[in-house]
Length: 418
Image (cartoon, rainbow, N blue to C red):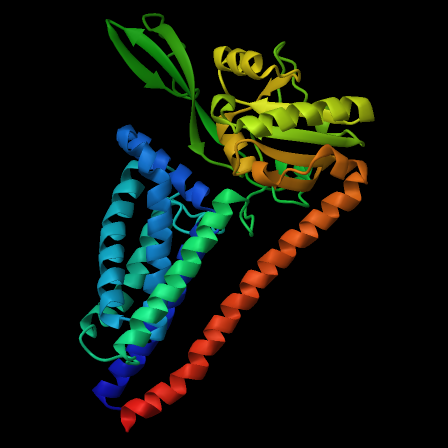
């Protein structure tokens, strides 16, 4: 095999590998733009760039779409030269960035594959190093025609995929992600995801003892502290984490009332239906949805069901909104990060029974109480079926587009060879 043929094979492998990685990376972030926006906010706060936080959602839209379209460009040859530059800039920039993140670790999860695949900063940096040789091959071939398309078809392919992808992202924000990779997905049994399986590693700590002598403080362990030397004076004890153990997917799910009573176990063991309305900041929540929550709370009280409104706002904001809207339901406190993880909506609604999540709704899709009166379980299952049908329809449309590309591909190539 000649050198030219070997390089041609390497180029094909590089295009397919990088194309699939970028399409997957863009898709799993595009399916949940708010999750990517939260990750951007974490980075901005870690690097003291909080003034950029209002751009987080816009950056989430653009970055996910850019990754997805770069992958499409490499895989199908649409504007290949542009795709080669795009993948090179992305990989060089993020390889340097992830190396810095791995050294400093301001945010433990890089978020490069959204919530679908959780990777540490060192794992992400290693992944980028593995991909760089393939990026070099693609960049070196940027001027060569790869699966050439007529200019109109090439730009048209990018535009069609771009428009569809942006519509896909907007739908995920206006409703809920079609695919939920988080531990609070519909069908999840929460208690199982709060437990540490038998045999999994536990956190390991080292006890550090601080003793002072002649104005100087030193660290000692339990094995070498100066217990026989009375000239040393004990100052303090500290427990340092030396090895991180297994952390269950759900580890901070608590629902506390104004009297600091934790209702978590009561809710998870309740054999009846429990509605959980989730709002990370009640002062920023949709007002119509809050009024609907008040109606739902009254209906639950009359129907023998449980209703809990969970938020992380300060008491002053809670009291202000409660008075302005004349809300009658009790409000419980939950960690803000947990609330953002449970549902990508402010507010959002969950339906639980015996600790299992039966339903989840964006505030734009919350059913009316008369819908629930027809049968809680039947209505919930019907709503989930409709959501699944929407997801299936999106997949069918995507497959149809890809099939169309391949069908059109052959005559175009034959036309160019004439």
